[in-house]
Amino acid sequence: MKNFFKKIGRKIKANKKKTIIISCVSFFLICVIISLSLLGAFCFNRFATGYVPNDAQLAVIRNNPENQYKRVVIIGVDGVGDYFSQTYTPNYDLMFSNKVVNGTQINASITYRGVAVYPTISCENWMSMFHGVRPYYHGFLFRDTNQRVENGEHTDEKKYPSFMSEYLKQYPEGNILSVCTWRGVNNGIIEDNERITKYNSYPEDVKQFLENYVTDDDDPAYQTASGIMTVVDKTQKATVSTTVRDNIPGIEGELYDYLSDQVKNAGYSDETIEMRDAMTMQRVITETVTDPDKYQIVYMHLDQVDHAGHAYGYGHSGYIQAVSRVDMLIGRLYTAYEQADMLEDTLFILCADHGHRKGGGHKNHGMNTDLEVNVTFAIAGKTVKAGKPGKYVNTDLAPIVAYALGVKANKNWQGRVPYDMFTTLG
Ligand SMILES: [Zn+2]
Ligand SMILES: [Zn+2]
Image 1 (cartoon, helix red, strand yellow):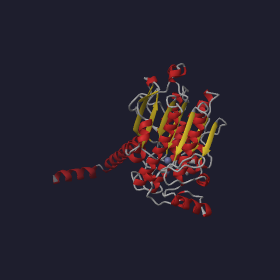
Image 2: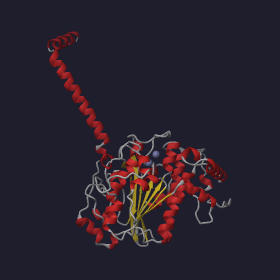
Image 3: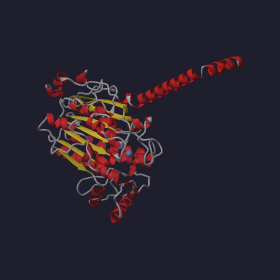
Image 4: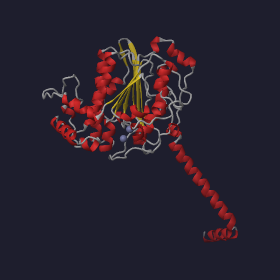
């Protein structure tokens, strides 16, 4: 053995130049292999697979009323990742189950292994979901992206239109509703268009909301004078102690004192975010049930799960409570649609931008771990194929909604309609 190494040592000395070249080349090759595998993990996982529906496939929808929906309702749950699979959510389970409604067969398709785009930041992902392309293309990548859309910065919407403007282009009579607890989506991600009605539920609205607040100790949900109820009932009492001031910048002074008193007196101590989500949902229900034919695409953005993720982290009891409260809101929507006979004409979608790591903290999503990357994608309607769809990536939301309404996909979209999601596509 000793001789063997001596021999090699002698050889290296004799061929110094050659050895250096060989070492450099090997080092270079190893670097290339490592970079390629990292690139694979980061990028190739985000490449969509599935259909780009052609005219004949779209005609199956456009020419057959039984394949058409009156509306697509999209429930965006910020930061929930795959957590709908991890906790008790009876209303979500009901909405996304196979059933017969008034003689119409409705099927559900769910995956908890949807793939968020990288980085797993809200703006990057919602922008990709609405505009069908990965962040490098829509241009919102790393640099204060959430603030930029909150401030009203948009992507190149001519080149990468959202599914909403593609719908409006192809249906000149169409109208869209978007109600958001996180203003970033309405302010910067969705195009400004007179046929897209936008509402944001601001912290200031909570004051108005609370002014109408009539507490009734015997009623688990407090009924307000205007018929709006808060989402929190006494069995869902939050045990956490974050304050309005910690979580909603801009609420100070009198309004802060007022809100904290109200929150304390109401017997729970989360923050205005849960009430803002309740207002968002209530607005969606009111606007769509009172005029069921007005909006063909309805989007809502619920934000409390993301706030709980930052405050406590994935899987913490505070996070679970936030998911439960969102589930109660989903129940309210489902019941309202059931009573209004709107279930069979609706395509429901629930989607998420990203998940959260455990432990909480200001920046506990943005990386590439499974808990951050895996997202829920659930869809239920009469053209849905029951079970689990093929691979879903967040860029797929745009082509999925477009296809469901018989709208041609934009040629620049990178998202696809996943395999095995619709019976009409085979
Ligand atoms: Zn988010
Ligand atoms: Zn977040």
